[in-house]
Length: 296
Image 1 (cartoon, one colour):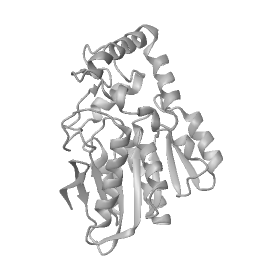
Image 2 (image 1 turned 135 degrees about the vertical axis):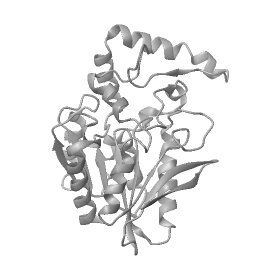
Image 3 (image 1 turned 135 degrees about the horizontal axis):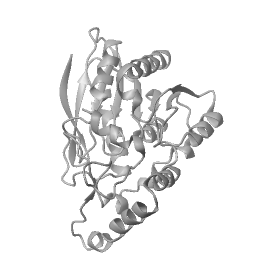
Image 4 (image 1 turned 120 degrees about the horizontal axis):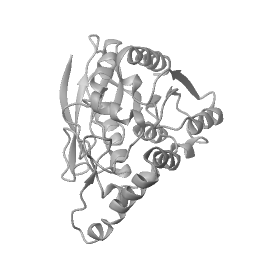
C-alpha cells in the first residue's frame, strides 16, 4: 500500500510516495531519492515497494525543482538544496505515526549516493545506508565524461556553458543542456555508451535537461564523499556495477579500503543503471534489505 505525500523544504515542498508495510507498527523507515536530475518515478517506486514488502516504511521523493516537487527554477541542480531536501525528508519521516524515529535508513543512487553519506554523518538516527552505483569523486567522473564525449563535443559543451555566464551574472535566463543523448541534442552532459539506457527507464515526470545555472551556482563539486572516509561511522553497503561507465570504480575501492569494516561492497554484472531493473534489481534489493535488517 502507498499514498502520495508532501513535506516542506525551504520555501517549497518536496513530493514523495510513502509505501507502508502490512504490519506497520513502529516500523523502520527507508528514504530514497534519485541521482543528478532523476525522478522518483524512474525505478524508485519499485524499489520502495520492495522495501515495504519486507516490513519497512519507504519514502521515495523528488528534489525541489524536479519531478512532482515544487520549485520555480526547474531542472536546477544544487547540492546545498538537495542536501537540505534530504534533511527535510529525514525530519518528515521521523514525525510520522507508526515510524520508529530512531531507526532510519537511507538509499541513494549515483549522485545521491554522495548525499546519503553526508546526511548519515549529520544524523544520529540514521542507522544504515545503501549507496547504489555512487559517484564518489565528482572531478574524476567529469574527467571520465570528457573522455567518453570526445574533445570536440567537450569543447562545444564548455563553450555552451561558459557562453551563458554573463546572462547568469545579470539575472537573465541561461537555458538548458541535455542530460543524456536524445534525438539531435548536442552537446550533452553524459555521453558514455550506456547513458541512453536511462531513457528506457525514465518515468513520466523525468525531463532530459539540466538548467545551465547549475554549473555556476549549484556547487556540484561539493558532493565529494571521498572526504568522509575518516568520519563516516554509519554501516554502509556500496553496490557496484562491474561494467559501470559513468561512475569510476577506483575511488569506490579506495573508499571501501579506508573505511572497512564500516563499509562493505557488493558487485553486480551490470552497468550504471543495471540494478534499477530486471533480475539484478531483485538481487540488489535483497542485498539492501539484508543490510537494513541487520543494522536498523
